[in-house]
Image (cartoon, rainbow, N blue to C red; front, side, top):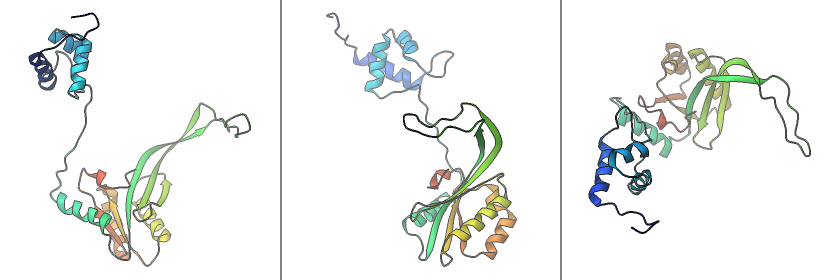
Length: 217
């Protein structure tokens, strides 16, 4: 071929590269690289790269997934999606979630404020103040968030957050809370508190399906 011209690769060879990429792995490695595939197929790395691009092959990338084994997956999914699309009258739908083990960091010295010709500053080093847990409830009506940070992630803190929600939402509305299956949400004292506050209704996501919640923190 003329200098600079891309050599023509037979369809059989291209098929061999694609099948090897999809169906095999190299010795002592988890996936093919352009270098190892080129050596195995007797081609250049540029050719392997071009074939992979044409067939949208990215052997270095892995997507993870998890299937829910919840026996009531469909019923729970319909219930939650129904709350999103057609919430009950005189009610407020809230997606509730917690994020634990958040590092509570502070700077070792006060920073300097923003001024003309200079941005605000802060020290590079920091000091640790333990950890905190973020509790958040996202309103599906207007996107507003009720939030709080507490030292721990137990049923006591969850009840305290429920009381906060109770105080920061209109009293005349029923509250439908979408929560995951964390044990704190099903604690006997939480259930007892909910019985005494009948406007609260908890809707549990299917197991291994926290993605159903719009307010995932």
